[in-house]
Image (cartoon, rainbow, N blue to C red; front, side):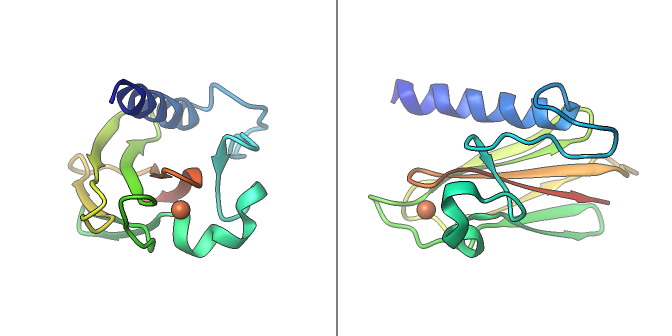
Length: 135
Ligand SMILES: [Fe+2]
């Protein structure tokens, strides 16, 4: 399980770096690109046919953020974890799933928060996915 723990630490750190824009090449207002490392709807790379089942879907209602990954769950292939990160790199929360769980998680934003949000979802076969949104 050490590998899984290391991955979880790395994924949270990656999400925080994305939020801070400290990695990758960007111009003002552009999302960093991490081709082959972080996949998005706009940049699915090798997983272009996997967007619908891997890009996290985000809904926001009165300060509550729900992340859903529309992905089947089985012991051999499942969503391992979600995280939600604020624009300043603050990790609002994370949820680790087992293969019998539904890949859905809910987080409460800090009171009055407005700005960018980064939702991540990791599939054990199809890597690390990111959806950026704002509230
Ligand atoms: Fe997958």
